[in-house]
Picture 1 (cartoon, rainbow, N blue to C red):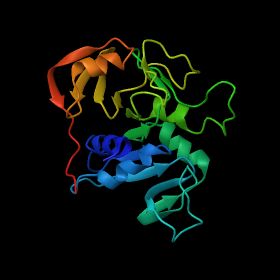
Picture 2: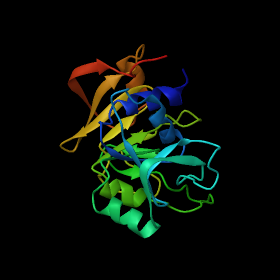
Picture 3: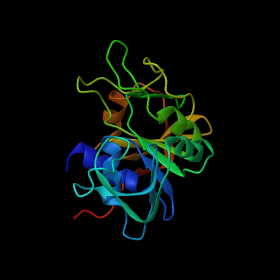
Length: 218
C-alpha cells in the first residue's frame, strides 16, 4: 500500500453516514474509494454539483472541481457556482478533505500557492475551510526533499487561519483540541521518535494514543 492510499483509507474512517462532503483535488478524491460499507455520503463540488458519482470515462461532460470526468448519482442536483458557494459559506458542508502544503501548530493552513510558481487560482479552498463544519488535511508528512510540512508557523501564503481540525499523514493523525495540537494515532510500525524528527510543530500526546485505523483492506 502506498502512502496516498494509506492516508485516504484513514480519512475515510472520519466520514459519517449522511454527510455532505467536499473532496479536494488530488489525494482527497481517493477517499471515496475506501468508505466503510455502511457509510453513504453526498459529494458536493464547487463547480455546481451535489451528488457526484465516482470518476468515470462514461460522462466526459460532467466533471468535478479538478476537471476529472465523473458521474452523478440518482437524485443528484446541478446548479451554478454561485449557489454552490452559498452551500459552502452557509455551513451546509459537513466535512471537507483538502491537500496541504503546510499546516502549523495554530491550525493555520497554506495550500493554494508557492510564491514564484504559476497557479491556476485559489479555487474554493478559502471558502471551504471557513464554511465546512470539519476540515481534514490529507497530505504526506514531509516534502519530496524530506522537509517537514507540519510546522511551528506556516511560511507560505495562508489559505486560512485557525480552521484545521485534523491532519492525516502516512505516519500519524493529529487533532486540534482547544487550540492545541495533539498526536492521537501513529501508523503501524512507526515510533514516536520518528514522528518527532519529522515534525517541526510542537504537539501534545493524547492520553490514549492509538495505532492508526485504515479500515478493511482487500
